[in-house]
Length: 99
Image (cartoon, rainbow, N blue to C red; front, side, top):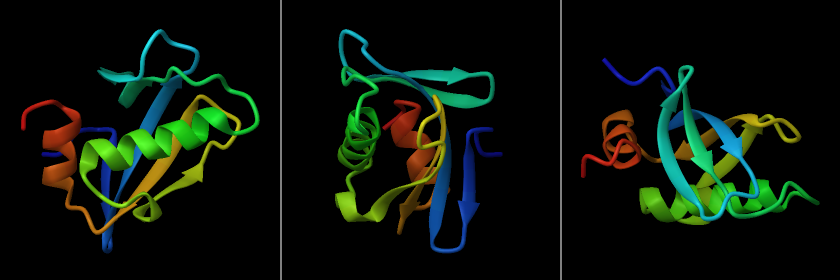
């Protein structure tokens, strides 16, 4: 059983993310209302928070930034992020901090 915030799609996984911009530092807080809550140091201005989120996820999951894209939620705190070439088990292990 995978986490509620994680969905496997052909060749990729999608993460349901709840973003908290302007935090003191960027980090994963864990599951919150069925979504993965992530604090971002970046402000929600001119797409800065979105860029910071994609960069952070790529780094955490060990994939090139080009494999991480925003599917929906461009201006919302609730976002869907697609990560190409990554399995659900690996994504869940890394984001849950069990690796």
